[in-house]
Length: 316
Ligand SMILES: Nc1ncnc2c1ncn2[C@@H]1O[C@H](COP(=O)(O)OP(=O)(O)OP(=O)(O)O)[C@@H](O)[C@H]1O
Ligand SMILES: [Mg+2]
Image 1 (cartoon, rainbow, N blue to C red):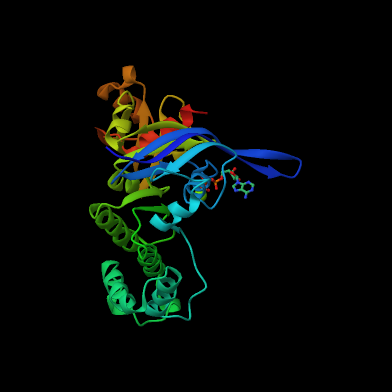
Image 2 (spheres, rainbow, N blue to C red):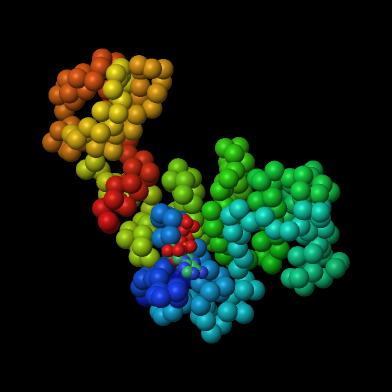
């Protein structure tokens, strides 16, 4: 497999008044051609900093990063021609333009010959599902439509790699789904995609491989299925039960990661973890009965979110 991105010992510090902040601390990873690669981590972990360096918008403090074989510091112009990016929640200041006018503007910036612009714009707006809204002013667009328009824009230069920093932030479930479908379609066309997201389900659905990043360091890289397998020692349960004191249950010291969701009081769905040796169905039922009648108790499959929560807790 072709290594399309190679990051080695990459660090970045930001100067702050009276000190500095290490946003990236000797990070190394690789992305292969054609992959959808997800960077996941809490706020402030260093995801956007990584993307800014790889898109040549920010210089590293030390270490090396190569994109398409070119060095991000010494050969940034060569990289810029062949990649593109969309930052989530990008508003842009183009509300008074129609989508077509907006696309023409960027086609000109990208030096697409006039003759070719019309066809390219139609093709890209169709691809992102905005053909029917092409003559509408952008300020009338929903957030999801704006985000898809940004993606159409980022495809103008036929990038080999696109970077999507929180592409579905603020989108409603249908808008987010349309965007995920679009990401999948782009991946099928062979475009390598690096994305960040705080939605674990989304990362699980979209990404071939995922890196967990926290405090500027990568702690785990792998396929979602392997990341979940690495947590197979966690025993997860879901109970449907009566609960008369939800606060007490949430603070239970024997059950871990307790999540209580109301079905209709006093009936609740209760998710929790226990240590492997405690995962005895009958004993757990008796234990739970101290909170109220247990209607159902089932083992639950581990989700990427479970693995994420577990892992981020572990790395301190
Ligand atoms: N321009 C800056 N000046 C100073 N510190 C910065 C700057 N940009 C980022 N940081 C700090 O660097 C760290 C990493 O920030 P970064 O934006 O890369 O995180 P992130 O993983 O993208 O977080 P989020 O999920 O909130 O978007 C944070 O502690 C942040 O406060
Ligand atoms: Mg960010």
